[in-house]
Length: 294
Image (cartoon, rainbow, N blue to C red; front, side):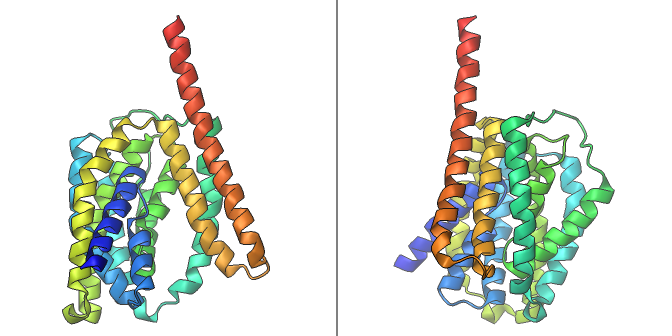
């Protein structure tokens, strides 16, 4: 019982972060299941089954708060679903652990780009009736992200969110909302693929229920948070999360970096992230002070 309560709390925290920043539910939940000795395919299947409900709740909440660009969602759903289904069917035969370091390196660099753009550039984005992002860009993005999501137990948000944030034409809150809403179709497709491949009997249904319950309660709170958080601050939060998350994967695979350096590297990256957040907050407070003094 105690373990189920812990899982429900993890599901709540993971969905709160995922709904507010557009990533981390699958990665957080799958990592926890790995710690309990669950096989990769079963862990990923359990997480995706929970995500069928949590992403539905999250998507409905984001739509309710106006955080969704429907054009982006429509263009991501079909390729993302195809990629997720293929990845789920072939997970047991794919070297997912060998691919992760390359994806992590790409995201690590992209995280600095996103951080810098919202810290020093104009990261507000623009409110548009239609997205300027083309089908030619979104279709391969959806295919790859859906595939990585199934094979790695998470990856839809970590791939699509930073890449869409690095493009101009979408507000950060609409990037997060669109990614979370389209993830529902990805979770359904991945679940179908896993059920065909490993069957119903291998799924940990109690773990699925615990993760699901925690995520349902967190979904509306996260959708509300992403609406009220300033876009520059949201962009910096996402960029720092990308950097920290993928630094861990890279350090584990780079043997030439001594393990004694890991703590120092984590500390430096964390200080960079915290400093960036404080700078954005200070600028925000300064702008309000100037406007009030006029």
